[in-house]
Length: 311
Image 1 (cartoon, rainbow, N blue to C red):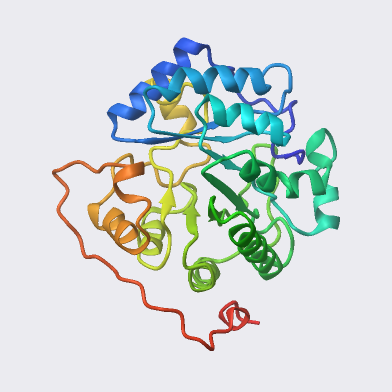
Image 2 (tube, rainbow, N blue to C red):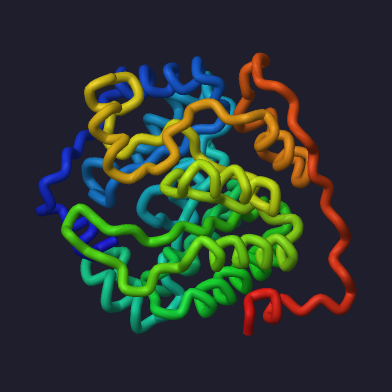
C-alpha cells in the first residue's frame, strides 16, 4: 500500500532474507506443525522480483507441502513461472473496490493501477494456481457494506469462471499504523461477525480467512460460524520466528493473537465444515483434546444475501 502506513521512509526494520535464512525460517515453522507457508515481500521489482521469488520457491518446494505468495501483482506469464517453481496459491488484496478511494491511497508504483490489480487473481488462475485469495481492507473506504458486496461479487465471478481454482476471501480490519494513521471508520466486532456469516451463506464453497490481528476469543468464535483459514504464531518483523529477540519485538507491532498452537475444537470445526483447513494446513499436537464438530446446512432456496448484510 502506498499510504502512510507503509511508505519506505518510515523507521521500520526491513530485511531481505538470504537463502539460508529463508530455509531456516521454513524449517522452524515445519517443526511447529505448519504445512502451509505464505511468503511475503515488498514491491521492489529488482530486489524481490520474479527471479528472486522463483529461486526461493524452488528452495522450499521440496520441504514445504503448500507454498503461497502475497507479493506485488504480476503478469500471467510471470505467475506461470512461479507455479512451475512450486507455488500453488496467490493472495491479492484489492484493499478497496471503490475507485476514488483506491486512487487516494495508492499513489505510486504499479499498485496505483486499479484495474491491473483487480485482474490479478484472474491472471494467477489462468496460470494454473491451485488457489487464489482476495479481500478488502475493511475501514479503508467509509462503507464496509460496499466493500463486502464488491468482494463477494468478485469471489462469485472467480468461482464461476475459474472453477478449477479454489477461492478464499479474507476479512481484515484496518488498524492504526506505524505512521500514526488512525482509521476513521472502523468495523465493529458485531459487524465483522455479521459479515462472516453473510459470506458463508453466500459463498458456501469458498475459504474464509481471519487475520491474526484479531483477539483470540473472537477468532475462536468465528471458526464456529464460517472461518476456515487463519495464520498462527504470526510476527511482523523479518527473521522473527527463529530469533527470540526479534520475535518479542515484532509480536508487539501488529498481532493480537500470538498463539502458535490452536485448540483442536477450532481446527475440527473448520475441517468438518469445509474440508480444507484441518490436516493439510496445520496439524495440532496430539495432546489437544478433541472438540465438537459443527455441520453445515443447505442454503434455503429463497435466501437473500443482501438482507444478510443488513441492507
